[in-house]
Length: 57
Image 1: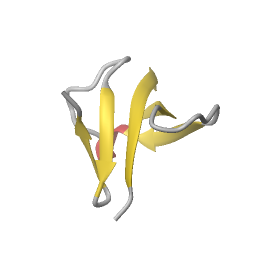
Image 2: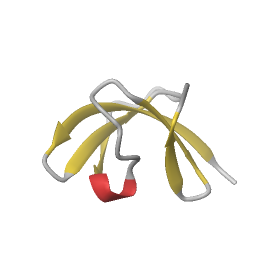
Image 3: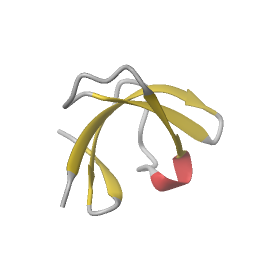
Image 4: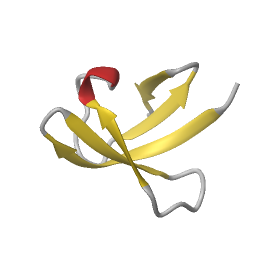
């Protein structure tokens, strides 16, 4: 199973823009906030694994 690391770059209403931090990538990923943990803010680091996001320590 693939594992990816992201950082929340911007929160815009019901969506968040995520930047991949485990790989050099300039593209941002737009994700519905309903799919993300409720306690995120800009700068939060997320781990995507098994089709779900969780906050990284």
